Each structure stands twice: as C-alpha cells, then as structure tokens.
Image (cartoon, rainbow, N blue to C red; front, side, top):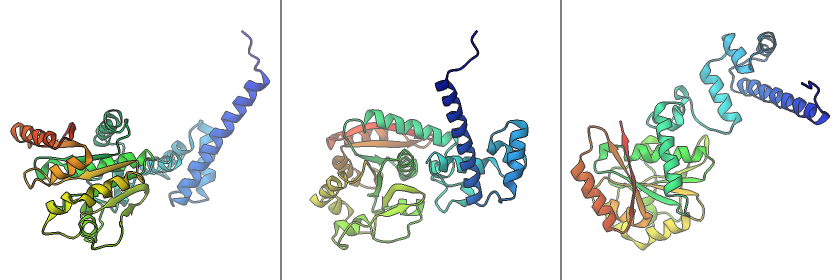
Length: 296
C-alpha cells in the first residue's frame, strides 16, 4: 500500500486542520464573550486539550469551567442557531423551541415543521392559520413554537394573533398590552407595528391589540385580506393564531383568508365530534385542513 500523499492531499489535510483550529478558537472566544471563561482559563483548557486530544469544549467542561448548556449555547451561536437558555429566558416557558431546543418536545415540533414545508409551504404558499376546538388545546403554543422553529431556519417569519377575544401571544412573548391587529384594522394606528423577538432576528410578532367590541366584523373587512396579501411580499412565512371554534366563528374568517388551517389537539382533552365539526366548518370556507397535531 502506498502511504505517500500527494501535494494536493497534504494541502487538504493542512486546511482541514486549520479549519478545526479556527473552530475551536471561535468556541473559546464565544465562551469568553459570554462570560463563561476568563482569559486566564484559556491556557489551562488548551493544555488539557493537547494532552488528552479533546475538543476545546470537552476540555473546558472536564476542568469544571463550563457546563454542557454553556457549550450548546456557544455552538448555537457558531452555527447561527439561536435559542435562549431556560435559566436566562425572558419569554414564556411555553416556547419550548426557544428555551429547550434539544428536548423531545422540540424535536417533535421540528417534525411538524418538516411536514408543513413538504405539504404546504412548498408550492408558493406563505400563510397558514392554526386553530383548535377549545382554548386549552394548545393552538397558541403550537403557533408560537412553529414561528420560532421557522425563524431558526433563517426564514423571515411573522406571527399574527388574530384571537382578539382571548389573545395569548402577547403573554407568550411578554409584549404587554399595546396596539396590534385590531387597532390596525380599525384604522386606529397609521401603520403596521410589529415586535421583533431577540435573539430571533427574522421573527416578528403582531399581537391582537386592543380588545374590540366587534372582532368578527374587523376580520371580515377587505382590509384584513389586503393586509395579508401585502405582508406576503415581505415575509417568507405568516402564521395566524386563531380563536377556538367553541369561542366564536372568527376562525372561519381567518381560515378563509389563509387558505389552510393546522388543527391543534390535546391528548385526553380533545373529542372527536367537535373536531369533525371543526373540519367541516373549515372546508365550508373553501380552506384546506392541512393536518392535525396531537399535543401532550
């Protein structure tokens, strides 16, 4: 067997080694910038790394200088995969995709995201409603987490809370009780006012806004459809959190505008008869039932 390598192969090996060294150095800098490592710790980590042929993060963790969570956070920055450690989160713990991205719940939600990319957002569609039969079946939870997951892919995402009767997105994202969709449709504000969500730079949220006396009438206005059409030119994905079907018929107006609805159900809570009725009402609007997600 010929053990000699060509000049090009040697160059590739050297480049690969250099890339690995740069990556390890970047991890160290990210950990320093985050305040997890002190400059004087670097020499200890590098020494152990060389002695035991470890990765930088493994060596730092073995020395007790950082935790596994610190390493995951640094890697998420290096690979441009934003999330917020649960201990530091200023958002609701309901945002599993943001605070616990490596959990089984987040992995299950990623499967839903993949299905939607293949079955709904692959043919030029950009807007999807998310609804349920009851308020406790998790439609708001599902819509919020999907919004984060699509943003983690680098997609430009807008989450709109169209549930003006019992809005929940303002609580999930800690937005307060400011202006929102109702104020825009009632022409109480001159322009669209969305909230950006750090560190998800491609995610924006439009809350429900001031509680109006006439949610159905506002959603029935042509301006709602015109608003969505205009927003589709600026965003890759628009998710609409809707009121439950037991609460009102508002969801039908939203589904009709979106063209499709994803149904949230909850194990040991949802019942077949109301779900069948919800499906019929969605189809009656001309919209599609894109699928149903069973939440625990």
